Amino acid sequence: MAGGTLLLAWWLIAAASGPDAYETVNAFLSSWFGRLVLFGFTWSLFYHLCNGIRHLFWDAGRGFELPTMRMSGMLAIVMSVVLTLLTWAIAYGMGG
Amino acid sequence: MSMRTPLKNVRGLGSAKEGTSHWWYQRVTALALIPLFIIALAYVISLVGADYAQVRYVLSLPFTSLILLLLIGATFYHLRLGLQVVIEDYFHTEGVKMGLQLFNTFFCTIVGLASALAVLKLAFGG
Image 1 (cartoon, helix red, strand yellow):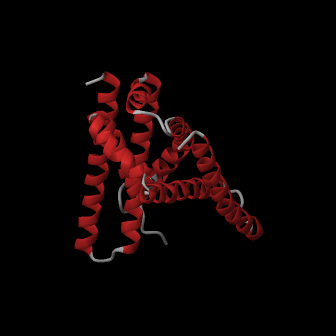
Image 2 (tube, one colour; image 1 turned 45 degrees about the horizontal axis):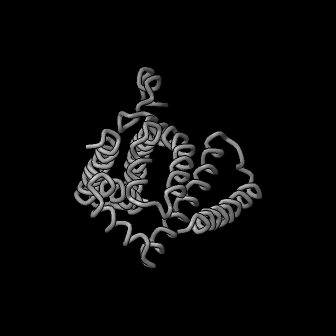
Image 3 (tube, chains in turn yellow, orange; image 1 turned 90 degrees about the horizontal axis):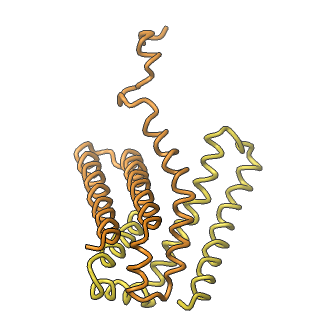
């Protein structure tokens, strides 16, 4: 997650610096390695989001029964995969 | 028999003198980040394949700046709190732990502020 925030910071700072710096970031992110890193970051973000929502329910005192916990754990994994693939499908659909 | 005074109980600040504020702010930022992340992701997807001028234009819109500044503030605060817990849980040498905690604070402050500055520069067209 910390590494991913560095990507965001790098992209914003490059965009603010000028076309050349932006082109460098863009070239990296468009390369196969950049796409792999971005894909991994997307997946970890979505998993963090889904499991985080699971934790917020626990904080509210809900969903502590073992079967529910097992089900919500699986749901977080499945949803993170689905949302990641959906995001990338839309991004490629946009002409990425 | 409890050795705590009634005043200590009612304050509930514990040994770190912070009470539940770390736990609470982690949840507050988590909740804030759910909509902020979704909006920011929509921006990123909308900018796929865009050229530099288009990116500059979208990043100069006031609503974009607002969302990005909120996102950056919540993200780096949440990140600092989260990494702090990871360091507390997995490093047991006092010096190493202290050094990593300082690095965590400096890292999140510097990268967060640098990102916010970039957003402001894009907003005001410097």
